[in-house]
Amino acid sequence: GDSVTQMEGPVTLSEEAFLTINCTYTATGYPSLFWYVQYPGEGLQLLLKATKADDKGSNKGFEATYRKETTSFHLEKGSVQVSDSAVYFCALSTSNTGKLIFGQGTTLQVKP
Amino acid sequence: GAGVSQSPSNKVTEKGKDVELRCDPISGHTALYWYRQRLGQGLEFLIYFQGNSAPDKSGLPSDRFSAERTGESVSTLTIQRTQQEDSAVYLCATEPRGSNQPQHFGDGTRLSIL
Image (tube, rainbow over the protein chains, first blue to last red):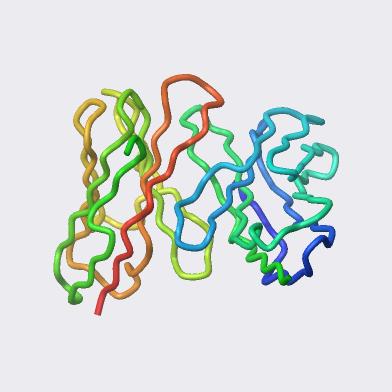
């Protein structure tokens, strides 16, 4: 079945460091891909998305490119801030119902 | 506010009891999803409602789990004869009609089974 695999956390970085969180997927058909973020004490919210191959989603300095050839959607940010500390979830949707299949989440901790 | 509202925010109950969780969708959002998030894991899809269509129940883990929604209104998720492995955060998400629309998540109900 369809699945999403994320790099295990926690990921601990210093402020202004470069961030990559790896995400790969297995899916039949042509999924839409998403990154969701859950800040401490807050609900899950959409960070960015891409709906077809080679699309790049971007938001708040984060980017991810839909790579069909490597079935990947890695999240990157050039310079992280303490306020980026959160749990990041990669997800896909293939069905016309829109249900999301999530990875297990990666905790990011950014230290001053 | 105008977001997805879930209640209660926390629920502690004894093994074997029934529990009912509630989700109030954003007005006008026709699609509604329930997910479960166990500690340290990603979200698992449970059930999907879209208007008056038959729900997609393919993610419900056992027949102890059921959910109701009338039209585009409130949804309730019921867990009967709760077990300790049911302990999790139960999240509701809604989205407006149309493709490629983001899902809006509630803050969840944290369920603890003693």
